[in-house]
Amino acid sequence: MKSLLLSYLLWFFGGFFGLHKFYLGRPLMGLLYFFTGGLFFIGWVVDFFTLPRQVRVATLLSQNQTEGLSAELTREFEVLKRGLHNILDNIDNQPGATKAGLQETLKQALKPRVADDDLMLALLRAAQKHGGRLSVTEGVMETGMPFTAVERVLNAMVEANYVYMENDPSTGVLVYIFKEIF
Image 1 (cartoon, one colour):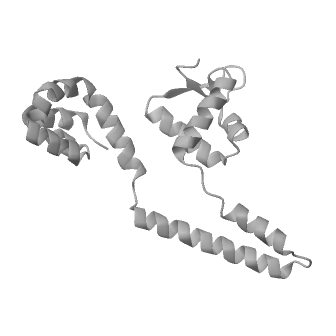
Image 2 (spheres, rainbow, N blue to C red):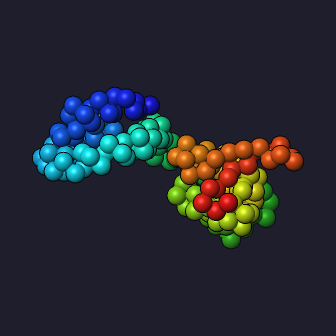
Image 3 (cartoon, one colour):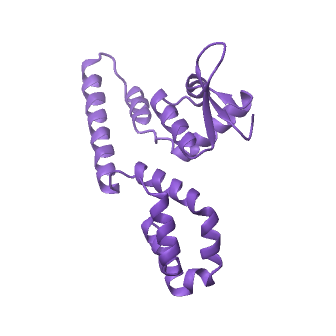
């Protein structure tokens, strides 16, 4: 988790050199600040007002990038191999299995995962249909995605202050409120 206090200290004492940008995981911006003196002082002043949001974004990104790309790809590849192995084992054990059935099963297994940005957009559309209020179950029904994926993305949206949560007074169900739609 990135510290807002440390970010402001780095901004104040080394902002012209981009120290706070390096700390927040933005080395290219850090280099730009270094060579232009904080974007000719203007960027340094703007950062005074935008630094809390930059810290929230950097914290959210660091929480979601716990493993490297190669580890994630290896894990996904192993899941795919295991799934294909199970499908082929089940085809051999089922009488009357056809080539078309095998092809359809493989298509479903190899279907690409929806990216978080696409899921966020789908949840936004679902919230619009539901008057700016959306439960996890409604999100699952509208998007067709698993509960864990919908809940993970909704919680990330809460963390980024796009939505907030409250309990429905009549049912007690946790509802996500989309501020700009509600």
